[in-house]
Image 1 (tube, rainbow, N blue to C red):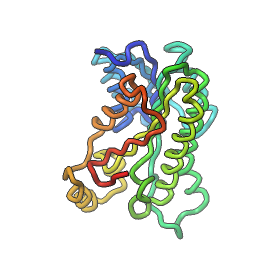
Image 2: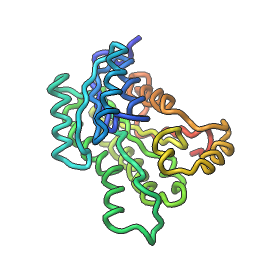
Image 3: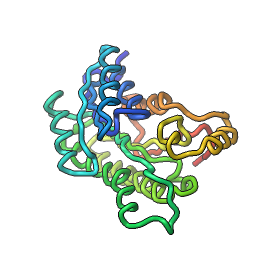
Image 4: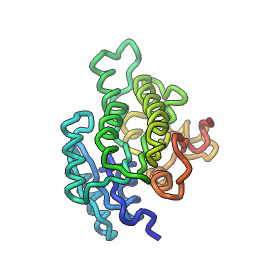
Length: 251
């Protein structure tokens, strides 16, 4: 059964890793997907090809989601391709950028981390919501770091993701009367480029060993959760942060 048949979805940071898995999963469920990317056009085209090879429908839309002009362009491209209504927004775009301690964080770095994780979520949501109707859904991406402060050198990142968590709860209250649900997912250690880049192999092995399920998560497992939150199957869930970390952290 195509849970999302007839729905239009926009996925920021949708070209690779978790974003790609989410884009493909939503398309498999019947949604027409706008896959946003910043620089990696090859990855975006590979995700688009995977969707089309599975008889899904999608476009790719380049743009920097930390800039309002780009966000408006992305939304307009999605509407031009698929119509005036956007039913599903998934704010995946974000990143650690670098591991830095307080003494090494300057104002530019702090602002950059806040922009890519928190400001982007605000800008895209603000642009999309006027195009949503009753039954619309927003899925934001927080992190286990928002709950526990993150790993060594991830203070700026964890702070930004804490902001996403709070933004989600406040927005759920504001949009609920309009029939729009807002939730977020908070992943723990997931096997992605993020950790390939920023986390040492030894640390990853130690975290996996300390996890009750004794492994890292996979992007496909995050995508399954996003599909649930974006679909009518979760119709009475809003303002929630769903922890998906194999049991390393309980709320």
